[in-house]
Length: 177
Image 1: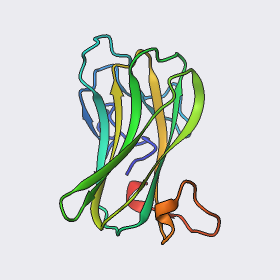
Image 2: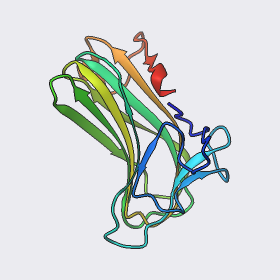
Image 3: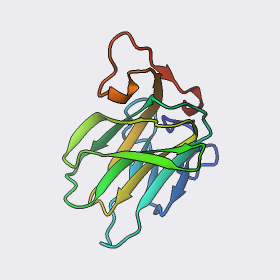
Image 4: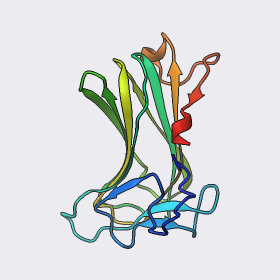
C-alpha cells in the first residue's frame, strides 16, 4: 500500500501505510527528486558509527502457497558515494506454521541516477503475511527510494526462477499498490 510514497495525509514525512523505526528528523519524504510522481523517501546520512539501523517497513496480510516466486522491485538514487554502511531491501515471508524466510538486496553504494533493484524469494510453504523492510545502517550519504512493486508468480517452475520465463504471467499483489 502506498508503494510510490505519494500519500502522507498527516504530513509527518512518513508515507501513509508505512511504519518507521529509528528515523531522524532529516529522514522522510522529499519533493526534490522522485522517480515517478512528486515524492520519494530519503534516508539521511548517519553521523554516529554505532547508530541504530533505520527502518521503513510494511507488513501485508497476504495468503499464499508454496512455490510462489515473490519479486520486490524498487528504485534507488544517490548523488554521493556511500563510503560506509549500507541501504538494503528485505522481504520476509511468514509461514502459517510460525516459521519465516527472508532475503535481501544491498542497494548500490556508488553514485547513481534512478536504478531499479530486484529482490526475489521463492516460498517453501503456505504463508499468511509478507513484510517489506527498507533499512539503512550507518550509511554516509543521502539515499533516495521510490516506486516499489511486489509481484507473485504461481508456478511449478518457481523454485528454479532467476528471471521470469516468457509465458508465465506475473500477478501484481493489489494490496501493495
